[in-house]
Length: 163
Image (tube, rainbow, N blue to C red):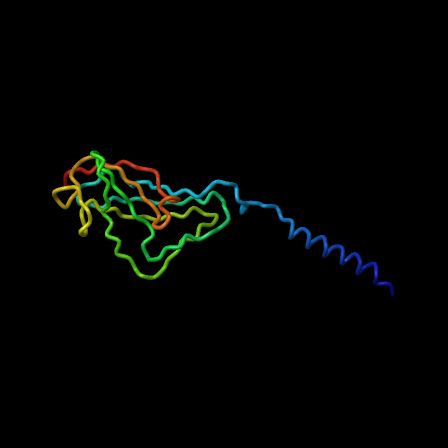
């Protein structure tokens, strides 16, 4: 019984299959040159003084290869508020867990809701006489802690109105 031709054909099929797995199509996980982007969207653009402004943060990975954003603590995002006169400040107190955390950016859009207080919660630089943001128009930008240069959001405007 001659089995040599069958082994040769079998070997050729294995070699062809191996070549197909090594020279794969780049597909959806190939780098396209578009960096991930962080965006912020407000649930409403008007909030009463002293209440929290609800915002959704999203990071679009644009189909790039999966990777992790590493954070030294449980805090991952911070924000700045800019008043009409140009004063820049934050209402974030940065009370964080000490455990390192991470965000995995993969094929799906990453989204998280944050709550931005419109009152002073701790002893941070505060450009106003009272503890509440006075009525007026402000701008909000959010950034990923440790990635500020890479992940700074678009700027969104909001109004603070009397209670």
